[in-house]
Image (cartoon, rainbow, N blue to C red; front, side, top):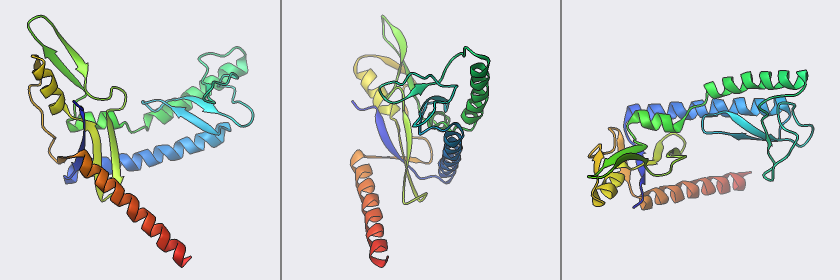
Length: 213
């Protein structure tokens, strides 16, 4: 059973939460772009917590990164340096990296604060434990259609996970779950329809602009 679902953000407060997240994500993107220019990087690799762990370079490699290039093109961030200059470059970049991570808006943390679960406890007569629900590494993703007017959250469906575990004979904690206030679950077909409609609107607008250009 699929343990991920689509939830339309319908409440005013949740909409404000996710629109604030979007603005913060854009600001974070600008900060990343500035960092790219500062270190002379062509591309960058960022972890789930907002830390930079790798970068690609068309020219000289920044001294905070390894000279060795991986198959994906990334030069990994060094953990320690040999020379005084390398150590200083790593220390300076670490401060910059921490500042960058400090402004990183985390979708998973926001979704959890909104009431979406990422773990489920279970037990039967012989065992007990906990497990991840849905996708372990990216279990929340906010999606916008028509700019900020329509928001859909792709997130964990704890109700589906509870149903699956109970079918196996487990007792679960919690024993039930429903979408938080301000969120309405929609089908994947509904989501795909909205996505296609939004793409069509963008294509029509581009065609109209081209015709007038």
